[in-house]
Amino acid sequence: MGRIVSFALLLTAGLGPLAITRAGSVEEEQAAWDVQLLAAQGIRVDGPRLLQLIQERTLDGPARERIRRLIGQLGDDSFAVRERASAALVAYGSTALPFLQEAAEASDPEVARRARACLERIAQGGPPGTVMAAVVRQVARLRPAGSAEALLAYLPSAESETLADEVRAALARLAAADQASAASLRRALADAHPVRRAAAAEALGQAAAADHLPLLRPLLRDPDAQVRWRTATVLAAAGQREAVPVLIDLLTQLPRSQAVLVDDLLRRLAGERAPAVSLGATPDSHGRCRDAWAAWWRDHGAAADFTRLAQLPTYRGYTLVVLLDQGILRELGPDNQARWQMVGLEFPLDVQILPGERFLVAEHHANRVTERNRRGDILWERQVNEPLVAQRLPNGNTFIATPLELLELDAKGKVVFQYNQPDGERIMKAQKLADGTVVLATSGRKVYHLDATGRERASFEVEVRTSGGRFDVTPEGTILVPLLTANKVREYDLTGKMVAELTVEQPVAAVRLPNGHTLVTSLSQRRAIELDRQGREVWQYETSEGRVTRAWRR
Image (cartoon, rainbow, N blue to C red; front, side, top):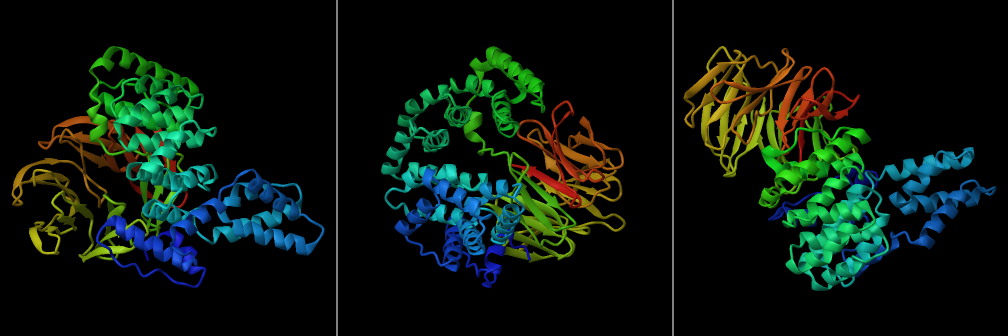
């Protein structure tokens, strides 16, 4: 249980789950897993060999023509030719997916049937790019000669946006660690392909070398919007003021999945002075948003504090959702498509995103709290009855809430704090605050603020009807309280004073985003929604698979 879906790649080969050995760091653990995955596929972890694999998957003109020729042979009069073409297309793997997806709609029924069969056989290998992602990461680690050139050449052929993200991350790592790679990336700033220009600019910008910045500035005027977007983003993070007007103009030139990332960056830069306008979902609303930001820059740009961008973690627009009844943890890209998912969790009432692609999960029905990596491997576990809340604290301790008690464990599992709930009331939600105090809601229609020893500081009446999960605490120190039966999300200070309110149908959980918006899950609607400061819906994710009970953005 708890294995990420890509383990189907190994299970269908009869190999069973990999035996993961915990390493000394997240990076070492990832490298060990990659080596085992590649070995299971018969791939030798050798720099030149890995580069050869990347080059073989790079779809230049001749390679594209070979795939198209094979697609045509799916309808050949000879059964043997059709069979060989099918086998060859399956061997291309996810590289052939766009071509096969087009062929699956062909008017020739035999071509369409065989294309669908090829797609099904490729799908048995798990999400597109699983093996290639491991190859890319190993290349960035081993740095064989020509790594940057090979990855840049391959990037337009990446089978998915998730894999493309891996390639861009590898290029950034190479830019920071290897002078030869940095030189290749500088040359790629003038590449004919915009995807390569954009990736080179992003990698060099993330390497944070001051001598790269003058080379990137001309790309702010690049004819391709994607190049301008990635270049302006890294330059803004480096404090380059000329990037901001470019980003503002891009609000009407990018697809919404990317425009929302621009809007978020601007909101983090503006802070409380951000304009009260939402991006929306139409060209007109994008235009109004652009105009509002242009006015903000004209009026407040001179005082903009660019250190806000440097101090905050990189925002990718990924949304993590919990499908409670299915035991699924799923991460969505900005386009709402699944990037990966973890399955087999047992009623996960709370999840915390930890550094290094790790996740702390309160598995209510399994009577345990687990720490897992993205593949679902259990890295740490604590048996506890019916956990509702799991929170990793800055000091490395773990805070756990159950219906009857609060616990804090140190790194060795020793209990360093315990609070037993008085008879007659059950704990519903909880959160340990940065000052060591605790906020909890109970079935007695109250929210309590406890000091570090468990003594009551304050309490106020609030009817919380949903059990499980942490309270979200805003930067101002207020808490967001979902009120299921009142159809409200209310924001309270710790004395019980209500400072804000949003109307939402049957809210389950609410999280304040860095841009000031609020991410809410709804019980009756089985979806997650994002509301702006005025309570207008600006994003949603809905599924027929079951209840969406938690959502976070990173």
